[in-house]
Length: 171
Figure 1 (cartoon, rainbow, N blue to C red):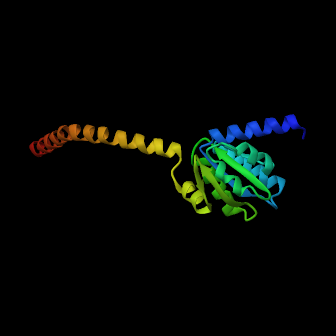
Figure 2 (figure 1 turned 30 degrees about the horizontal axis):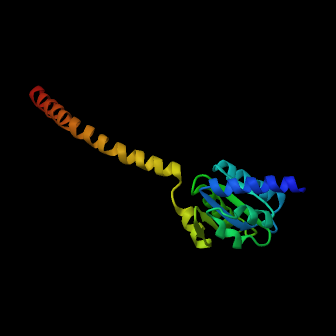
């Protein structure tokens, strides 16, 4: 890799570190190519990405970024999992580490906050952006549904009383 390629890589990593909602750092020693492709596919499906980069270049890219304190985690064979959604990469990484012992989460960052292994696990247990939007929409729609039910209830009660009276007269 020549100097120009390294500079492009450092710039690309810098953009990743600035724009990502969450970054998870993990060791991947021993993963086969197929297992790594499986991880990449799962991450892509969730809206995230996986990146393997030289630790030295990643540390240079971290300089001056909000998540610069994760540089201490970049030792050995590390992989970066990241996503704009603050939960997606953590969820996929946590799930993948449960099914594959060779993938070990070291920690990560969420903005300026450094996450240890427990922190990544806590972020992974949070609802995703889509789940939050759905629950908010449900909360907004529930009062309207209750009002419609309350307005319609007296009419249905009157209708059932009238049909009962009608049945009594017919009998």
